[in-house]
Amino acid sequence: MFRQFGFNELLMLLGGLKWTVGLTVLAFAGSFVLGLLLLMLRVSRLRALRYAASGWIQIVQGTPLLGLLFVAFFALPLFGWDVSRWVAATFALSVYGSAFLADIWRGAVAAVPSGQWEASAALGLTRWRQLRLVVLPQALAIAIPPTVGFLVQLIKNTSLASAIGVVELSREAQLVNGATFAPFLVYGCVCALYFVLCYPLTAWSRMLEAWLAR
Amino acid sequence: VTELFHMASLIDSATYRSFEVYAVVCGFYLALALAFRLLFATIYRLVFVAT
Image (cartoon, rainbow over all chains, first blue to last red):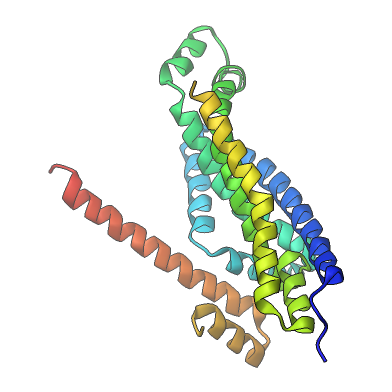
């Protein structure tokens, strides 16, 4: 006899949701740091650095996240670095996220009028201080809504980590489904949980956009 | 669905060379993405950029 889908099963799914949130936070933090680094390279004055950064972004954006996850999971141990599924998933999602965030932020930096660069150069600021004191604060306002939008995508993409055996919401759903054989109910609940997680962020992103456009 | 990743997991379970298999699969996807990028860039140049 199969288990009935009841309150306990819902609690198991909520337990999975907790790890989905955890993985998202870790992946976003990693994407943020790596993305900032890539952005610095991308707006550098040295052509070689710019090309290296945009080449890297091309490579990451041209490969599916599932592939990145598998490659991270199987490649890191080859370099003698025996990592857990969690580290591999966080690493792959960070690499993936950083390539997109760096591109989003580069767009935001490019949207700051070039007169701002010139004016701050005329004040004798170094390139680094032009970026930090004048350009980035203005780019920040432009960058926030798409960054929150990308965070929503990242939440949904953490479901792919179930492929390398990270027990987050999607993997937990497979387990619960295996025990209850009620796929419609289980995956319905999972979709609802993802929606509950993502919709407030989407609404917030839209609010920020309206507020910044005022 | 027997698309690229399904075939990859079949080959993976037959050979146990996980990294090599998935690295090659990623290479395929990258090649596809870059090929389409080139294609559309060419179309863009032909159609929208006045010569």
